[in-house]
Each structure stands twice: as C-alpha cells, then as structure tokens.
Image (cartoon, helix red, strand yellow):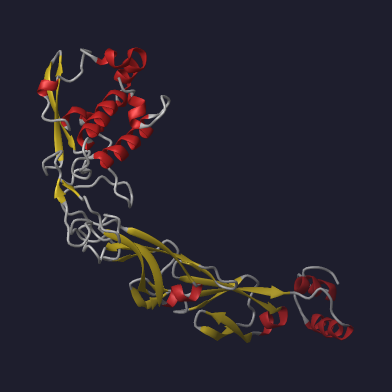
Length: 374
C-alpha cells in the first residue's frame, strides 16, 4: 500500500498547516477540470484519501500505529455508500480551512464583495495643518485587471463550472455515527466556494482578476486638522471582487512640531522675554504667529509670567474655519546679573526718591528689582 505521507510529499512530523498546504497544492495540480492527463482523476482521489486520514488527529494516530489497516471499520469513519461523490469523501476535513485570496486571507464568496478599506499615514507641517492644503500622495491599491476585465481567465477563455461542487460552491458529507446519520455542508475545497475553476488563468494578474498598482491622489486637508484626525476618501480603497463596490481610503494625520509655537486644540502658545525696563515702562515688541510677525503691546507694569492674549490668531475650528482660537503669549522678564557704574548711580538716584515703608534704602530697591543684593 502507498504511504499517505509520501503521497502528500510531507514528513511524518508535518503539522496540520503543512498537511493542508501540501494537499491544496496537489489537489489543484491534479484536479480533473485542470489536468486532462490520463490518471489525473485517480491521483486526485488518492490525494484526497491520504489527506482525509491524516487531517484528523485520531485517524492519523491510528494510521501511524497500524497503517491503512487501522482505518477500516473504525468508529466514526464515513460509510462510502452514504457519500455523494469522491469530493464529499474528504470535504468535512476542509471545514474551517477555507481558501484564501492572494490579498489578505479572506475566504472567497460567490457573490459580489466590497473591497478592503486602506489606511495611509500622512505627516503634515505645523502651519499647513492650521490653514489646510492640498497634497498629492501615491497609494498602492488593488484595481481590476484590464487584460481579463476582472474574470481572472486568459482573454478568449472563461471560468468553468467546478465539477466537484457542480457550481454550487458547497459540498455535503454524510457521516454515520452511533447517534445517527449527520450531513455537513462546507465550502468546496476545489473552487474555494466560487463555484468556478479557472483552467487557463490570465497571465497579467495570475488568475486573481485584480492587480496592485500605485495611484496618485490629490488629498484636500481642511484647516484645523490635528494629530489623530482621520480623513475618509470614498471609493479609493481596494477594488471590490465579483463586481462589488470598492473600499474607502482613510488618511490618518500626524502634525509636525514647531520650534517656537505650541498648540493645544485651537489655542496657540508661545513665550517672549522682555527686559525689566520694558516691563516697567511698557513697550511694543514683534512676535511670531501663525499669520506671520505681528506687534504685541507690553503694558507698563507688566509682571513676570503674565499672559497676554492675541484674539483670533489661533487655530481655525475644524469644519468652521471662520472661527479661530487665540494666541496666548507668556511674558518672561529678564533681570540683569551685572550693571555698570552709571546704571548703578541712576538706580540709586531713583531709589533715593522712592518712598515705601517696606523699602527704606537703595539696597532694598535693588532687592526688589533684581531679586538679590548687588
């Protein structure tokens, strides 16, 4: 008797996945709809018989111990008279091992299928995220093969009805047990549930009916997007199978940081350093905003760490670009660590005219101005 492991071309230590891959490869090679050579159908049956015995752990254990003789009359083994053809003999063992398409492992279905959605991560500059822009991107996605028009068959040919399932995409297996006869319905292992076999596949797409191409798209980035914003581009995902609608493209935004400006929602934050004289006397300084350089008035008597607000100089609200947040400016006051003799005399003269019950000496004035004695 032929060795089942040799028939499938695997070792005795092969796991379930290895057995399944070996069977599928050989089954497609010797399927009667594909292989017209004499003896192909007998070989196809032999492959199915070997896989049936090895795919189930219990029957495999009996086979390893007793050989093919250990399978005869075993409890739970199918009665050949209850079978609906040679394909049904081993269909049960394929339940849950459905065929996978070449694009992502999804089991094929007979009817139209919507295409997969795609994700694209896009880095956006700080200012472009605030005011919006248009960007051109390139995405790899699946499109219908232009050569075979999505049929998967070589031009001039077409898919044939699967002889295993008769075009239904399903097969039945009857099993006799001590509790009665049971019938299981599962996806056809020969056509993966499509009901059709492509004997002469399209060379351009390899029989898949779709090809991966890189497509240029112009994306409109609205004003006010932030890191984590998700933009949906309808119909730009993978093409649908069997005439189904295409999926969508989802663009995930990540905004780059700015060296001077910080953002929290619709509010912009920045800092500016002024001298103690500017803080005392007041001044007008130039600061950087998302709109460019603008003048900021420093009121006289401004205290350290005061926050000044520029209204409508922040981020436009997403979906309502007319409404904008504010730009908040934190004022830092710089105190000198050293002063000249002339500056000292001027400050001492000012201190002598300064009347405050808590400050009665020039050194006290220095302490208030500079935070320490000088």
